Image 1: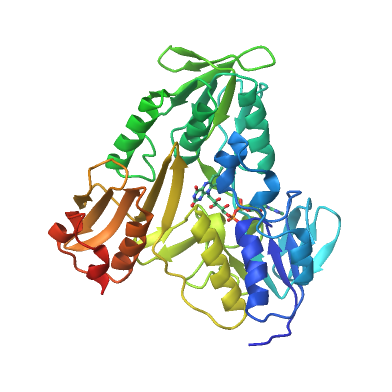
Image 2: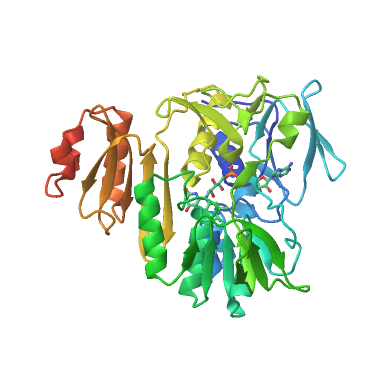
Length: 408
Ligand SMILES: Cc1cc2nc3c(=O)[nH]c(=O)nc-3n(C[C@H](O)[C@H](O)[C@H](O)COP(=O)(O)OP(=O)(O)OC[C@H]3O[C@@H](n4cnc5c(N)ncnc54)[C@H](O)[C@@H]3O)c2cc1C
């Protein structure tokens, strides 16, 4: 389909924003496209930030999804280090921090999220960091390289990846978590059990049910006080307590927002000419039975492509089974669907060991799973969930039986 239309403006030149632009061209969109981002880098992938970039194993340009030249060749007007400050739905204009105003026919908000702030004294001390962008990762690496002990506040996915990377670099690491288990918001308890054992085995001290009350030090951070009166020495700190979606522009524009910009099955917001994708968008997911705001690499890419297809006049409902991975130490952890403690559990392989999969089953149908170093099984499980295949638990739990047979 070849289209010549008005300008599409994309706010946020991150993973989702970049993919909207690229997928518009892939789908034959010939009209002008402006991709506007407030960072100085072209669209890049964030997963390496807590892994290879932090440890220094990979360099910054390797995270770029496309270079500036590649985007220019596609005729994409890429504007970096510029903030979109205002959206006017009535005049269909965006106002930029550079003083310019741009008219759009369709607007895509792909503004991602910002690390949630921790309101305790001392967060302004030197060597206290949060991790969202390349500059943060480089700064944390410099802190760690100077041999400082690291305290990670927040035992979620990003905090744990930082802990694993720092530990591999030979630093003393303590993880402080307020809840009674790790990754409690996004993982079933068997996975939390695996994670705490993994980090303990690697020499990380994990303190559960611990609330940070103040960071201490003179100019530089030197310690953390907990609300139970304990103190922990800290040469550097990473705060990783989740993100809040960047919904400011959407709210200002009068769009419907509720922990994310509300979008329909096609990524459309409450204004018919404005769409949203990636970490900032909240959509209905048929596999969860409710609305979700997914913070994952796969969602940022696929939802962006779905939004581009809608703009190009080839709409497809966006209804994926969620999937994400995390790399910690030598292990690759993958989670698919919605594994929940309320479901029946069946383990394939030796529970919590490399090569194992734990399935979460409701009335004979797999709703979710997690795997340690078993990505191939997770791919098949995704199809089981997608097709609501009724499964035989004996077959699932038998590592000798081929999962593939269940979807044949
Ligand atoms: C450290 C880290 C590790 C991760 N690891 C994994 C992993 O292992 N597996 C996995 O599945 N997912 C992982 N993720 C999640 C994944 O990277 C995100 O889900 C994905 O980056 C979301 O893409 P996005 O485009 O929606 O948001 P972002 O990538 O955050 O992009 C949004 C962009 O919009 C910009 N912006 C915001 N407001 C404006 C404005 N008004 N004007 C101009 N620009 C604006 C922001 O600065 C940003 O550059 C990780 C994320 C992080 C931070």
